Image (cartoon, rainbow, N blue to C red; front, side, top):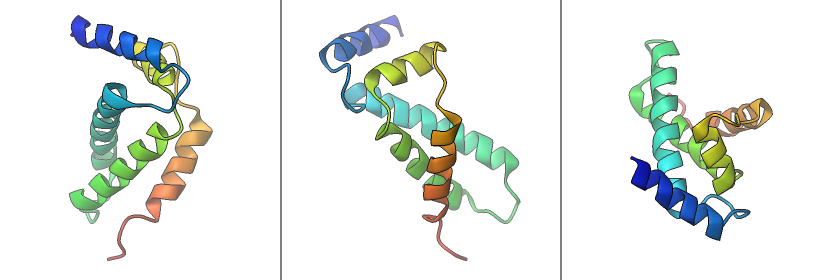
Length: 102
């Protein structure tokens, strides 16, 4: 696991102020999708299908990854930064409309 984070650090040095990219973006998306899915599934009404939760969570992690940098992702990962709650609210509002009406 240390090798993975060492590689991330190298990527960060090369691309510190850009949007999340490459490996950092992929790992962020995977972890954000998984975390979102687990939380939403635990809190959902039984009538909300897993597919809708997946759509919402993929949209949400994509929204966040477009607005955070590689440095942000690393700081969030190591616990020195949290995602701005206003950004999460904006992501949720944007992504709720992506869930198909049933």
